[in-house]
Length: 634
Ligand code: WT7
Image 1: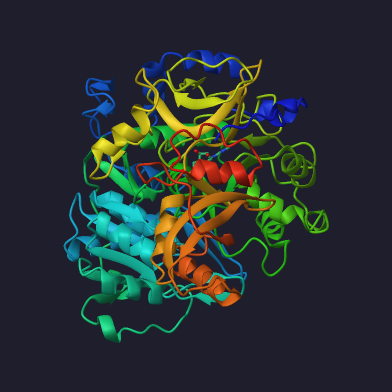
Image 2: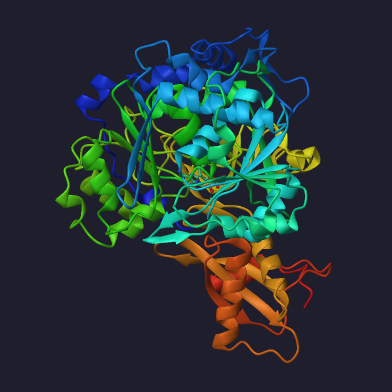
């Protein structure tokens, strides 16, 4: 995708940090910190010192088998130990680690000591049912404390978690369980959403019926939904009975820095979702450092990231990052606008949230209701705001800044990906901000805009965003598919650089302006979804012969699905079929797959070799020139 409009680069407003922010900041000088980051190995090894290593690393970075980089070679460490155990003999022992709040107003506070005991009990329970180091455990859970406990319990014993976002549905769940070879699935009776209960157990049942590989289904009671056990009896066990009587002590497994921590599936241009593999040591160092520096985390903070743990944002910055820093992480289960569009601001006021991190789509959604709701609440506890998931349009940035941040609070626009594991391009609190720009690469990170031949493009011109040097939380491979790992990220642009899959520009101050994806990936409400996955969902419907999918601009969601379909003979695209197709796609992929428009076609633009040319459909949608069509079939 190339955009030649200069809309974003015309944004010339600059917002300087206030004295109050600078005074409190861990890092007071941006430029000198960037300078320090130039010695990558020294920079990251200093950051690694804050953790408890059972054995120190021999070498910070090993690039002898590029692009399969290794960090903190031969270091021995445990994530749960560093995120939880490390705090229980300190003054943080009785501090709240997890503050759980839901849309019904229920709350639970779990201290570090309580979390320690719960993690250990569940870790022991997992061992009892035969889970060993290196085993995969799938989770299809709502935003409940048990999700964090289960993640930590896995890492305590060296099991690898694979979390599936609870807004994805049966098809996606089956695919992910099977690809990860998970013998264990942890799910729940349900989750609260806009006053209703979504029955996750029912979706899990359907998935497990198609995945005989699952031997044990652990069910968390979360929503008080009645549970039907019958048809899967023998394979199911309640979480509560599993942990009953388990000891609250469990020795941490001594993991290698490069032992896998988790797999998280994300969408690519083609084929099935990619299992992004993250490992333990480098991820820990990268995530904790970036959260601490970008959101300036201190002892007295109450951190709230509104993402779902089912996405990388939640893995890195709801679960692991905040606990590694010993802060309190607010876990919210529910919708942003239920019971009313002031729901989030009420929580900020009630608990005194100090750092608040959300997505542009949520801001645009809440912006529609004007200042009425934010102005009803005291938001003066907020010290730093954040944005992630897609480019934030300057209008939403300004609204967020004025109405939530009262014109004082800086906004950290953090650019990163499932694959990067941690923020790569982001301001620090002391950075002068431009609305719509993630500013510059963080200390220790080198990014550039290049053309497909590996030449840097001139300032102001669009090109491919690449990362030139490795970083500690980088993905290590794609699970079971090292070839695809190399092809997707390291061979698009020559010169051994990582290609992110985004189009971006750089301005005269070196600020990066992300424009959107360069591949066939959609961003619907900040959620990443591959056009090919949506196409196969369409084709899975008996009336559909062929389908091509592109993104269609949407003022709130950023993008929604626009599908061009060829129906099988004797089918007509009437309103009933349209409804049915929408439901079908939703059932396969979940509510993230929002279908905005379906158009019936006689033919789809294809290359002579039969590949659908989505580029042609996209150009037509945007009223642009179709470009080079020499490969077009007819
Ligand atoms: C893609 C990664 C990592 C957080 C959640 C999304 C887009 C992410 C920004 C930002 C502009 C952004 C990019 C990226 N993106 N953050 N601050 N400004 N675009 O993770 O699902 O792996 O998606 O989200 O297109 O490649 P993800």
